[in-house]
Length: 343
Ligand SMILES: [Zn+2]
Ligand SMILES: [Zn+2]
Image (cartoon, rainbow, N blue to C red; front, side, top):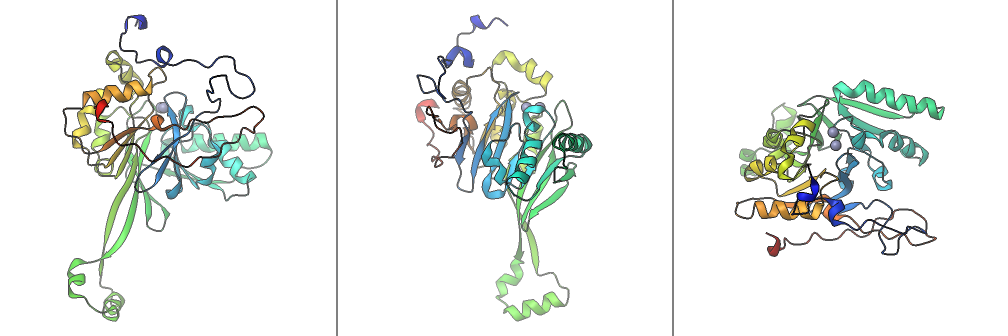
């Protein structure tokens, strides 16, 4: 396609000033040289990460002790004990061996990797190959999952896998807050504790299980149906890919097995999520343009979730000449209210 004929400027290179005259850690205009990490504060947890299609996707939820995908390994994600890998593409898995090795180097306990069962032996082989290069085994735990499988991350916090559709074996993950609650009929009776304990001792079930899906992460997927899965639709926060926005890129989306914005728009009215966070926007698409394009397209629709683009919340890091290139996360900003002028 001839890009010069496009008038709506969806492409980053059409809209961004590339940094020039790079000296001493930053350029004259203060454009940061370190990749910016985005940070979104929801009422439940923070979402920290970086996600650009084909380049890198890494999305951490520090409070839940997980990082979804690990295209590279920004320093803050070392603090999560669990890495949930959706598929093996390098922009999602490239930082995995470094994450595991660096955790050992920093004196942390071995990381646990959860991945789709069909790629478990390849992931294991990759980690072991790095171990041979380093001259020592890289301590880790590998948990292969299939669609519908569950794994308890900690008491009361469970990950459940759901199906996605991509060019390689893939899975999405929902994190579930699982609580045992007293049955309503028993709660109504306000029975004393010793009576309930006696009932339990006799083997009677006095509780029921309440699952609250906290967050669902799709990774890469072509299926709008992925977003119709109950675990996905009902999660408080949905983090989904949406790679293509240009009306001419439907075919690209279908070949690469990714979502096009029209796919997303078709399911948005069904979503019960409080928040939808969009990741994995194509490198060729300027994220602010994509956000305006989507908000304009849905302005007449009734949509429940608040929609945010992860990379619209990227921190503008400044690395001054002579300062160490260490990343210190700044205070996460409050998410701005939706701007009515953009709807
Ligand atoms: Zn990807
Ligand atoms: Zn992929």
